[in-house]
Image 1 (spheres, one colour):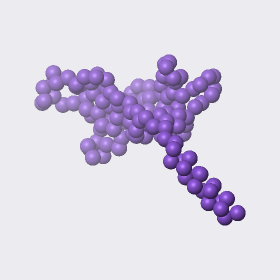
Image 2 (cartoon, one colour):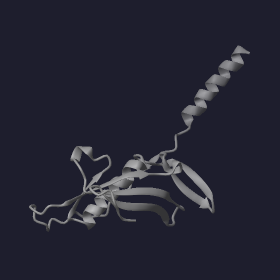
Image 3 (tube, one colour):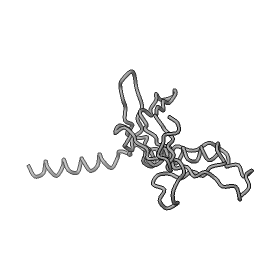
Length: 156
């Protein structure tokens, strides 16, 4: 019995040392290519806009990349993962893109206390962010712009 156990252990160690692990690939959202326009004078007062808070469905609050294999079937990839949490990557990517598109404003990601007060904030609720491999990606979200001084919603 003891010999059988030892042989089984040796065989298990041998098999595990022969297999090579499947590599994991890490991905990150990135902003549009380009640099913010510097056409404005430095003395021009810029509007300060905060991005956040942002909410995600629990399905996206994980490292594994989510894809749809067919209607209403979800697949969590064991080998393709986000390099950082989407709850941090999405608002930072949006802020960088808006900085390129709106050079008259400064953008800070929530929480922005280190930068002081903001004039407006963009609140984002992500509903869906997935797709089918080799096909399109679906990004569905609701957003609103709120004036921080009057507490009024400016746009939805």
